[in-house]
Image 1 (spheres, rainbow, N blue to C red):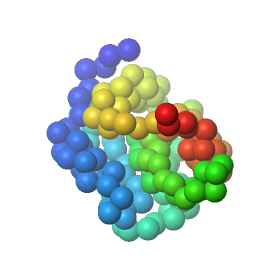
Image 2 (cartoon, one colour):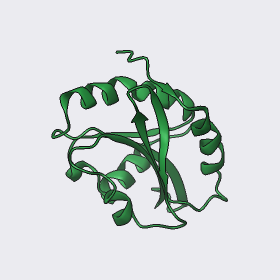
Image 3 (cartoon, helix red, strand yellow):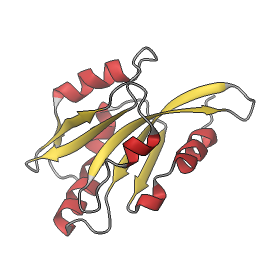
Image 4 (cartoon, rainbow, N blue to C red):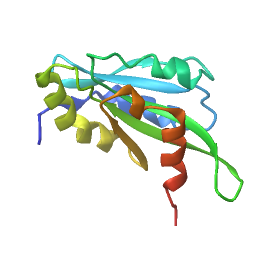
Length: 141
């Protein structure tokens, strides 16, 4: 479902920096402004915890996010992935849910190369264990 929502050009510029291993910020949050444009809402400080990231998800407020997850592969090698989380809580307004669900592809096109995507509607679906499991399932050939 196309909603006509576009991604602000500054999101792409931010993403180019954020995905670098030298960038130590932990997460970024995005929102749809005025029903028209996906904008960068907030960027974390360096090395913030998953707990502080999860606190950003409010029960009535949809948003998109990126989280930098460090984990160990099945081979025992340290690795990291960027994880895209689409937060569309069951308790949000129907209009907001429809807008966010229908607009995630616009942001995904800007955030090229993401292999881990989670769509959550309840906070129980956003845990560090779930994120690590999702990262470990990705195979790169």
